[in-house]
Image (tube, rainbow, N blue to C red; front, top):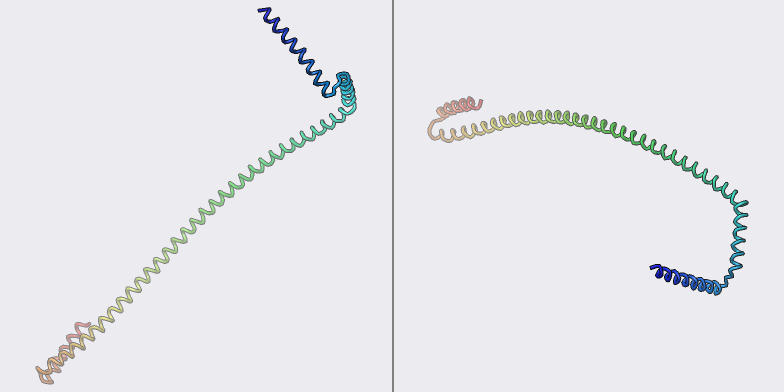
Length: 191
């Protein structure tokens, strides 16, 4: 088993060496010189040190100032949010109070409208009753008048009939007597 592992390690080592050669060939094909690459890395580190030493401090100060400004802005925004929430709560309370008052006013108005409607119904009913009484009186009066006219007409017809029927049966004097009795009887019945 140990031999297998050693064989395996030797294969991996050969593979790494082969890949290193391939990488160097690729770098050579791209025109990368390892010495120049090392010099560029050193130059980069020098520039990084200079930037860190001289430019980074002002940039960091500016970033801290910006951070403070943002923090203050967030704090003010939070205060504004709280104020807005308080204002919204007050608005809800005012609206609730206004709705309650509106409901009370509406209920009172409905009650007054109901009272007015009842009063109107009562007045209308009394007017209708009065009109019915007057109409009944008028009908009764007109009925009596019609009955009187009918009775008078019937009396006239009866007298005419009696005159015609008695003229053949009685003489003139007897006719007058019969007619007077008939007129008296008709007047008694019509009254």
